[in-house]
Image (cartoon, rainbow, N blue to C red; front, side, top):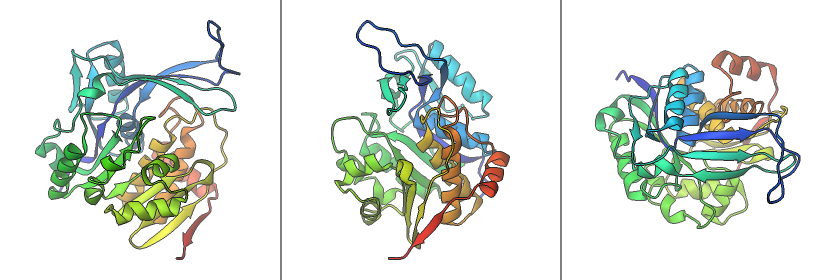
Length: 321
């Protein structure tokens, strides 16, 4: 069946304000100077949509923004990136979700977040016709939104699978709670699950990424890729396990790196590439993301990605049990 979209992305859409690293956090009432600040698209669903559109894929986006200045700016940036925004809803009842991303030299990022219009998104906005138009359904920001409940996502994924659509799940975990009760009902209808190591540890209580991935697969998902920061990524699928290293690139801002990894991996998946090749695409696209401020600003186009992977060596090892 011909599908109008390679992937329909659904979930959180955010207006990000990101600063270049400051020397240190200012004290109360103090001022820290940053060389540069950027207003960019953010949120898992929007980031993945833009990243895959930059790779030349046909991408739609389902989600909510506010009927306000930030919402209009984000919508304009998404359309400029050639993302199909017909399923985007502008709400007069909520402000656009936004995040301050504070980068401090030598420290991990800090985030100040307003959920905003994302709170109104529950997945029922996606029609059967929407699903039938796509090859892949990606849901990003799961666990962050109270309305996007396990029952809602499970039903959405069941409908997607009935329409022959590959289901992809990505999470954002609030600071409090384990959220395993949110994951367990959805994994049996999930084809691909993409947590990072810290998220996986909170969801499973396990310290080893291989054990984490095995737990997720045992609970029903068909394949799991876990990003592990400077330790690379691990991939566990039915026909094998692989481990990838990292590319050594100068890092300016790590915002959106995991979303870029997912985008590169799905790019390979939709090309019909082998799992280890998909892992290479994901790792390379994640590396491209950190070179500039913003979650999507520095992400490679398809020709840039191909050239980088051919030029730069990456160790990808098949792990024998």
